[in-house]
View 1 (cartoon, rainbow, N blue to C red):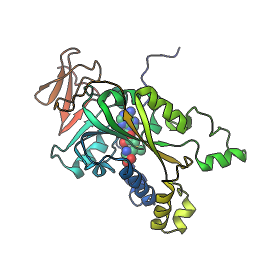
View 2 (view 1 turned 135 degrees about the horizontal axis):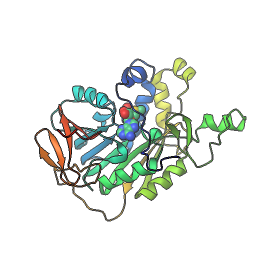
View 3 (view 1 turned 180 degrees about the vertical axis):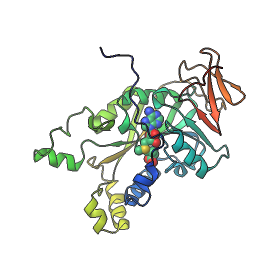
View 4 (view 1 turned 90 degrees about the vertical axis):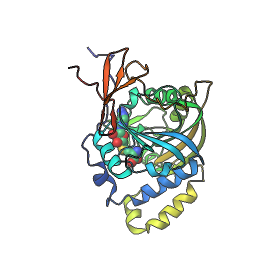
Length: 300
Ligand SMILES: C[S@@+](CC[C@H](N)C(=O)[O-])C[C@H]1O[C@@H](n2cnc3c(N)ncnc32)[C@H](O)[C@@H]1O
């Protein structure tokens, strides 16, 4: 019998060589550059504290310099260790190993959040969006990137009967294990249900085609993408969406105690190199400057 209480499966990058296998020297300069263009269009001029969910090795973290503090959250300790080694331990960056389905934060402690190249790994995306909304202040900015199911290639392939799944149907499609493409309308509804008002949407990466990237200079492709990003044509493989947190929820942006127990949501107290939840009698370790909420410490 299926266990209906079992937590959603996680796409685990622990120890993965994502940076060297996917990005550096792997011909994805075009994708990296056009994603930064879209982000810069959507980010506010200034902010206090931003939560970067699924920050990975910190590829995009320095784009968030308008914020006074950036909290990098990822399920993979090894990705965070790499980010920490490169971004430093100044206090401007806070490193948190945790599951996005169980965010370890108090309500309303961030006025910004990003989720870039991550939602495609979520079997229950609405659950994560609700967690993110909880951590945000009213009117906070949330920038989400998702893999677009209704991209031009999928539309053409479906029309030519070379693809079985329908790119126009609203439900997400799992094209590989724990890899989902989403329909723009599905994302809009999910954002609304989680307490966000959708603002600008930017289609990105129109020329993500191997042969084009090989034959056309990257600068030219980036320039053309830059123009198309303003077209409103939501048929690119990647879409960036800026939304605003709605509703009259608490604002605790001025607190330094941002953490809460990921199990019960109650505040934590500091005990040497750990954070302690009195309610659940659980200790959460702080290891070499990384807050580790993946699993509580064993009781001795
Ligand atoms: C494709 S990488 C993207 C990294 C970064 N945002 C970027 O664009 O370079 C996806 C990241 O999401 C993280 N991730 C996946 N599932 C997660 C979860 N349930 N909670 C927290 N992080 C998760 C992975 O560990 C990985 O670092």
